[in-house]
Length: 257
Ligand SMILES: [Zn+2]
Image 1 (cartoon, rainbow, N blue to C red):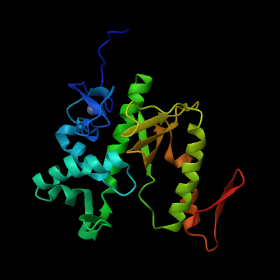
Image 2: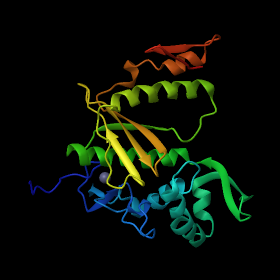
Image 3: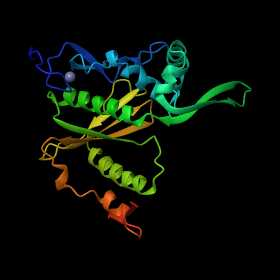
């Protein structure tokens, strides 16, 4: 085994000052009577890319645990750790997670009442968090820093724009196929699973992360050497068309405007 000290942070060229959990440790519950913190991943990190210091970790936790679609582990984690954090912050944390929010009381079948927060998630900040998780997993898997951009498709958040939704469906289908031969990893699958696909000759690849059983995010690793001008964005072109535009691939059709 190599004893070489990593010379850079997982996300930039700075010297590492600590190790960062990928994804953040707080996502993995400790209070549910089972070990859900088996072999957590850590990578070398500089001060700036340490999520604990920027409170990104708490933001991500409150954005994932307890949202519609997550499994029992995610729900139970919400009722313990997340609710405590929200109370401690006097509601400020909830305002950060949901840009516009209102809390509605909902009566369950057994007569109990739960408060449910509705609102628009802070997607921009979520994208930053997921991109960093992608960079961390890449570093862990391949032993080197990915130099480029990581874009995300947060598929558990619906898109209202029909063209954009169709384009996402198309992109996700292609990534899904590309990942089908790669091994899905994660020692605590009820909390977190991940997969990174093979790199193509340009160095590009894709990946997928799944939180609490169902909350999926697809990641595209786009190397620095890619020039955006060299690529035609079909979705942008289709936007101005007066007739429906479709992408057809492998016998499937995706409307992208
Ligand atoms: Zn850094």
